[in-house]
Image 1 (cartoon, rainbow, N blue to C red):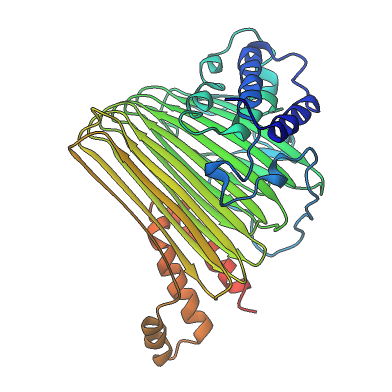
Image 2: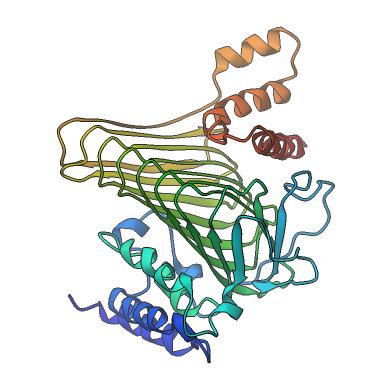
Length: 429
């Protein structure tokens, strides 16, 4: 079907203004194919089904909107107390001086900008592959745009059980920065890795992470987004899981005028497990969209989607989550919950939970609710001498607990709880 004229023109103008890398090496075919996909799909618009709750205008326009950088604050850098390998980007540009040496036992780690200069590379079978698979049945043109034009990223090949996390640290220094990064992670059979991400990255950030999880491998991902408020971001995670493998991802978002986090998961091996969760806190001019698509295509697999959003002063939260169970994917266990805590009458939560099932021996459920603070619980705490605002914060943390509990590592879980508590305390005034 031909694109509407307006959409086609806008897409052609955007593509014409962008340039592919001069020496794409082994990424060349994937980049060319991605350009063709964007041209065929067109950039997203409000008439697209999966964009009806979120205006994509500022994510697709030629120039990034200005975004003031966040200065000051008394918090220590996120995950600063965790022993990890640091990989630092400033406005999408790799900062070698601030990064650790790209070497760690059990894995091979390289920059995309350097590795793509060769003709052959292990990442050739990953880069753009999962993104392309994730375009069906829902178009994800911003991800294809990233595959085509991403300037850098990190390539990680994991061959063993890596005990130290790899930490992508993003700094936003320029009010007009427009960054695209593309990361690829391949875990061999039985391998294990944790990836951390933190920071606002740029005034506008388009990020893709493709994760290939082989049989019995385990991948964990914990991400924080904040604290500068005017930033805009579109992030995408694409993953494919083998037999008895595990994928777990958690994102905490505090502030940000526009954030869209997409996660596309394929369970293709029997007995695989995929959990994706998020906790978002929004105040004022805040729009946060979690869009998740999980496909069960194997026997006895488990998936969980747990998303909680706390909103006030006119903030908007969006959740779109789908579980697709293909024919033959018997004994599927699929769970989905999305909830919002509205701290005033001005905020809103928009949800679109979906189940599509073609197998008859499954246990799948979804639920979505919105509500205010439990007045009975609030009265109970106040009657025992807890100030109103502190009591509200305690109940808010309790509301978010189900999502935060999806983090297996206790130290990382406590780090996230501390960040959530700090956000609440800063807003007491």
